[in-house]
Each structure stands twice: as structure tokens, then as C-alpha cells.
Image 1 (cartoon, rainbow, N blue to C red):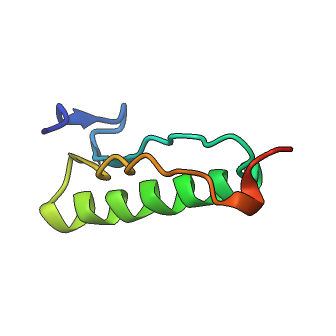
Image 2: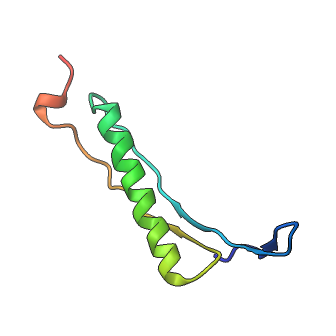
Length: 75
């Protein structure tokens, strides 16, 4: 997907490389750890967009649904 090119008011080109990721929370999962995993995946997708050239958007593959481990299941 390409992003429309733009220019700043002083005429300099404005470009953007964007990385997108989604999360699938699991009951009992540590929300802070899940948030950092989401940031890491979005960051990796952003670098994929940068490698593809200016004004690109890249998405991280959606994580597979995960079954909570016995120690994660609320009692």
C-alpha cells in the first residue's frame, strides 16, 4: 500500500513508513507483556515498510490464537 506524497509548507518532501500490528488478548495474560509484544511486532513491520521504500505501510501477520497454559488459567 502506498501513502500519498506530501510537502511541508517550506517545500520539503514529507514521507512516512508505517508498521501495523494487531493483538489477540488471552484471559490471564500479563497485559504489560502483551502490550510490549504488540509494540515489537508493529516496530518490526515499520522496518519492513522502510526497506520497501518511502511512503509505505506494512502489516505484521496476525498472531495465532493461543490457548492459555494451565498456570495462566484463572482458578
